[in-house]
Every structure is written in C-alpha cells, then in structure tokens.
Length: 468
Image 1 (cartoon, rainbow, N blue to C red):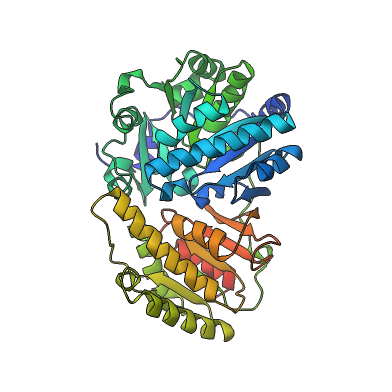
Image 2: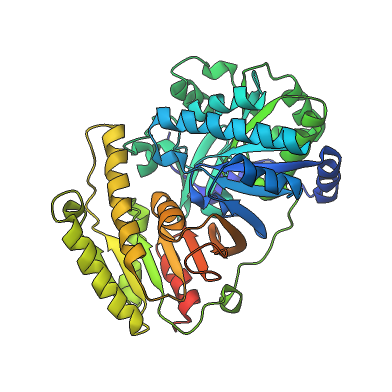
C-alpha cells in the first residue's frame, strides 16, 4: 500500500452530493431531544466546533448541570489517551456511570461520542467496550468515523489516509503508526479492527459504508446497512467532506430513533455535523481578544510535525525561545531546570516579550508502552510546574500537544469549564477561560501535535501577535 497523489485518487471517487441536509438533521435532533456528550480522549477534540462548553471534570453534579440546562452539545475532557489501558478502562466505566446517573436524574436523553485520534491512536476498543455496561448499551454497534479533513485525514475504500502536501499516505506508513504506546500495522480499517481486537472481530465481519453507498445510493441504503449491523458489530465509515458525513449523520439519527444501539468512536469532523452546526469562519485577531502584552507558548509535543513547525517558527519569527532539557527533567536536575526556565520566562513576560518554551527534540522513549507514557507524564508535570510558577499574566497561552494542553489546562490554569470560541486555524481550537481559572477571559489555544503544515504554528502566533 503506497502513497498516492490526492488529486489522482479523488478523481476516481463518485461525484459529491449537492443535497442540503442540515434542516432535516436539525429536525431529527429536535425529535431526538438529546444532549450530545463528547468524551474527548485528548483536549484537541474541540477543533471543529464553536460556542460550546468543555468540562475538565466528570462529577455527576457537573454533568447533571449541563443536562438540566439542556445543553445541546458539550465536551468532557478525559485525557484517557495519556493513561495506561487499565486506567483508561476504569475511567470510562466511572464516567459512563456518572453520565447514566445524571441522565436519569434529569430525564434527559443522551447521545455519546467517544472522540479518538484521527491518526488511529488511543485506547480502542477497550474504553468503548467499557462504556457499554454503565450506559446500558451492551451489544451496541461501534461506528468508527476517523475522517478529519480539517487536518488532512480521509477514509477512502476503507483505507485511512494522512495528507502530506500533494499526497495521501496510508496511516500505517506515517510516524503515528509507530507510536510507542499505540502503534499499529494496518491502514485498512477492517484489518485495523481485527488487529486492535486481537482477532476477536475478523476483518470480513466489519461492515463498511462506502463512498458509493453515501454518494450514489443515498441515505436509505446507508440506513439499511446500519440497521442490519449485528449486535457487538463494528461499522466503518468512509468520508472525505462534510457532505458525506451529513448523509451518515442523518442515518445515524434515524437509526437511533428506531431504537438501534450505537456507540460512536470518531475523530472531530463528524461532531459539528451531528450537532447540526453551520460552518463558521476562522477567528481573526480582533475576535481572539489578545491585548498588547507578551504571550506564552508551551510545546511538549515531540512528533516530527511539531518539531518541523517549531523549526519554521524559529526561522521566521524573532521570539524568545527557551529549551527545556528532557534528560534533566527525568533525573536529579529537574528542579534546577524548572527553576531556571521559570525565572527567564517571568523576566521576558514582564518585558512584554513573546516566549516559546519547548522540550528538547530528542525523543526519550521507554522500553514499553507503559514506561513511555510514564516518561511523557513526567515531562508534562514539569511543564505544568513551569507554567504554575509564572506570575506575569500573558496575553494568551498556546499549548502544543495533547498531554501538554490537557495538563496545563487542568493543573496549571485550574480550568473546570471553558468556552470554545472557535478555531484560529483549521483544526486548532481556542478556549476562553472561565471565572474559576487563574487567567479568566484570556484565550487558550489548544494546538494538536499532528495538525497543520510546517508553517501552521507560525501562522497562529502571527495572528495572535499581529507580527508582520
């Protein structure tokens, strides 16, 4: 399976549909009368929505408050991707039980999305199976929708691709497939399911909704496929744009109305379609609300894309760059390293300078997935400590990488409920911090490690700072 020219592969696909389904989707949502709850395994999942709350806690009382107000869509940030598998399973069971209790107390219907990575990393199928019992969804069909075109992720002929410049690369041929904790060998989603379930679900048992089904046959055929999925089965969805997912969403809502048990494991693109949101332009400098002070960027992500974006930023913007030595954080020099970086960052921010704190780029991996996750957690804890000790309020805070942005949000900034304003760049969400946080009202940019071209970080900081 080799990389292909995007233009060449797209030319072979059925013609895109021109149907306008949003009014019908909104009507189905009204009939369903449910709150959509997105359980986000990384804080980056809000990258396609706007004007929605995101919770960083999952106590029953917090979930119940949203359901009582009939919040149509909200996120619960679990950050389970940063946990070992057993802890992720236990967390899913706990959150599922809390949601179930809150739903019963408010008599509110719910629709659950388990938001996973568009490059196929994360605890699937374990945490999705763990949700079934507490939510009363035993035997539910898992609907897998990893398409995320805002970040260049497409599913075509059951193969999941990652866009790089003019080409589409099978996900199994990218660095993401070599992830120390969540590596995999297959980009064909049917085979990927067999791989991830250790053969319990065979590739030929997986149901596929093809682009031909979606674009030529139409939603009645797609609905028929969904309704005929066997209990405990898996259905994979091909998609390259919003129109494809509008058709899929319409059938999902109709299937739910007919009593079909479904659990969705998706990337971010399907969420606005499922919530009936119209598309919104990117936020501009004025809407971001940054004032004339220095800003803070923290880069913990170590994937090659993040490193390339950091290099481009260094080459093109005269900011103040502070490197944190990861080897020091893992040994006796941790406190000295944290103290030195904090002192320098505070001084620069007092001078209204824009500061970029980043971890050294040499990957330090453990001997297995658990030790690799533990190393990542130790590094993140140190970055949190640095941000906690910064006593000069910045104009904005940008965190790059999932673990980094989660831990800074919850532990350094004290966020419990934030408001998603929109996106500063395709796939890059902006949160407005709530009253309980350390920096109420300032923009917090959650920048995924695997999104954008090499100039993406440069574009965002240029927009935040109005650098010419």
